[in-house]
Image 1: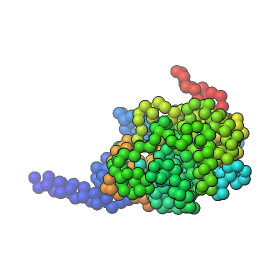
Image 2: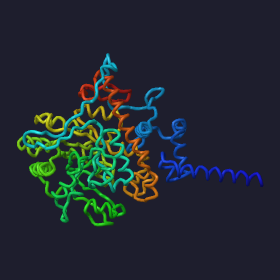
Image 3: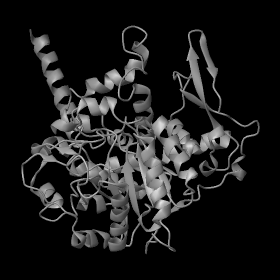
Image 4: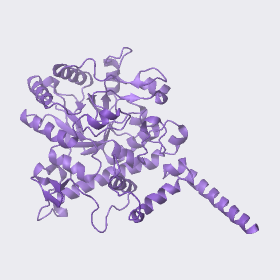
Length: 476
């Protein structure tokens, strides 16, 4: 009996020591929020690779993002090796055409950066934006994300030299915290730049444009998670601070209209773009989801006919994109995937001679180097990601984003859960992820015989057709 009591006391003491360690450390949010029991998750994650030969699910079957994708992001964010052994476990949909004589180290050059906005002619802006990175943070609103998560993203973006978009929830102090470049997004409810009736307020627009960090404005027509429906922020997340930033009632569901009430035609879209650029003096882009191809020709033809209303960039979001709460039919069945949408937009831009005028940003599950390199090959000037950076913050794909009960604090509203996410530690991981992804995209470029990723062309990548007996390469 005494021996059993001694063992129990030792176990209790060990559990107490582990508890104290877990709540004091800052590197692992799960352990801070769920001390002691959180170790079971890490045990399963670390030893799953060896146990999957018995009963664990394969690495590539999870959705929306499989374990292979998430593990690559986790390792990159932590700054540990991404080398693999015993061959690839992937079944790629495309491969890159390597050159017989790859680029030597001394032949490599730095991605040159690209300017967004023009300084002369109709549609010129007073302060164009020279973007230094081809990979950046897509729009995620404060309110949908916790203040700790937004702060970590802002600081990490500054470390990595990338921009972050605000999402449609308006500009918060947390977006500016790290000193990074910011793109202010305006959704259909015009949060942050609306008057009491919900119309565009030029006064609030000027106030936001006065921030030097705000480098561009983005008109959001739609996002991949829910094309044809506005943003959804549950009442539980609408606290006093968020209500003030957005200009909405406290403690009520915040549901945006399914489109801008003052933008119902291509011509009205051009007029709105011109108005925002005239007020702010900064580049203006448009985010949308591709559906009907006729719209692209009508829109780009209008840009040629009325260059003062031509956007400085377009962000094409695949139908598989989106981080927040969305109706399942829209998330699953509406909007073209990025694999079809991006080439369609690039071709339309070329047909209307806008290749040097309108930049293209691609988004929609482009979270790993292969997918980012593919998008650059297809003609994207930039790639942006939301969920990739959520994973770098420690997101475990718990699928609790809309509930406010995210166990990692990324989308939580519970102060106890948010406290577990340490912005100082997670900002380093955000920067590591961005840097590692860019480095491995460049590795692919060098293997293709290119000096840097700006030289990617469509012929550098080819689709793989898979059949019953194996696979064969399709045309480039």
